Length: 310
Image (cartoon, rainbow, N blue to C red; front, side):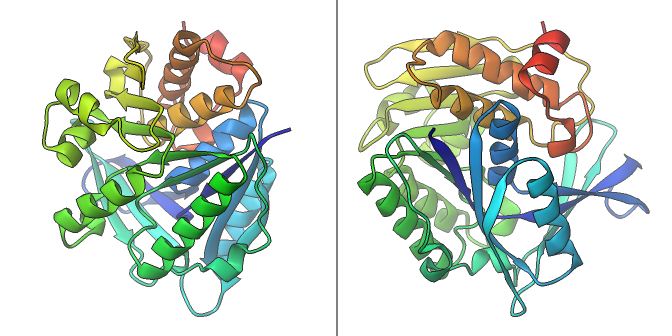
């Protein structure tokens, strides 16, 4: 059976209780977070085997994160711990207009300093998938380790999936972020990107940008647009659309990760090439996750999702 390997940040999401800015908020709820980790958990909830590759601090927060993923059925044997760096923290508040305010504490984050040595025992096989984002690509150490894993995955015949997941407040220089994303985009077979993110990366409107990005290895491009759904583009020019699903959304945290995790889970199923069905179900999963608070706590399995989202 093929496996999903996700590599990247692993952090504590402190989410505000009630509405207001971070300045106004006095209470927070602790949840496990990190986009690739969310993708990993959603795939497991849909019946796939998944492994997480990361590093956390040797502290209570790191223990909590490992325990959470383990409880969700994720293989945590490649999550390393260190006394040298800290576990990543993120605080988010919910404003009355539905927008979110973030503040990250990860300048000395352990997941920015994992190395090739941490993952030398990882062995990919044909049919496996390696998924990653841009948040953990801030340091030279992390970039080198990602390249090492990507080369190893490709040599084994695994598929590489990339979600740029732009977080501008984590980068001092937006152009450096764009350069980094473009560098790692070229390695990917599958990319999931927001419509606004695609326009930032290419400098073009989304529809025109699609033609530009199909170079190198890219075979499938997923372009999401929040509650308006998503589009799937193939290298041969075929396009599939889903207008999204109406739900009572209370928190959009992790919706895009749930979408991508669901798409990858279906991609891992033998002989699954019904792209319209795959896209529709991925949108269902993303919509379902917005009906609860937090990312991982709000995710569902196929039975729950099909019952709740029509």
